[in-house]
Length: 214
Image (cartoon, rainbow, N blue to C red; front, side, top):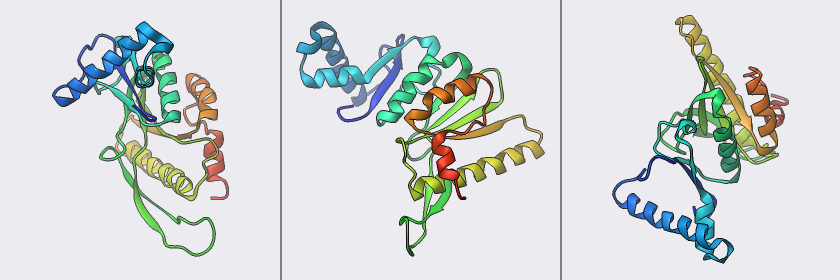
């Protein structure tokens, strides 16, 4: 939280942590109270922490976790918009950077010339269940214009992964379908507008640049 992260919690949950984490959470709450009382005269640390801890109405906190954590600016901005648009969602799951849903992808680190192929695991950032439907939006968040080889490979292999998964679900007679998205901040407004229209396979500007030429 002192650097780029932010935390969201339901406003009816006074103690979302336990053990040592509970002590740290209470310290952060003191910063929040200090900032609320003194505003710009509060200590810099209090101002930073207070603006990174956000409580929202319980009926909009549609997460299975006790808190929702975003690690950097683009994720923070997307999370703010998610909690403003929860009417179209049944569930919001922010996955951990490791240990969550993952699948392999491969890429060449260098943009030009011969180089080795790196094999890694891709952990998409968000899984969003559409309200009253069997549709899951899988969202990866990046900075604007981030068209690195790694992201191109993630996009390519992510599309392939969920295409295969959807085909297998269809063959098995299962109603669930997954819709894969790569987004950057300049795509957020259009993403929410298109999703509300039911255009779940809309592609962002970043995604179009990542798949170009593939």
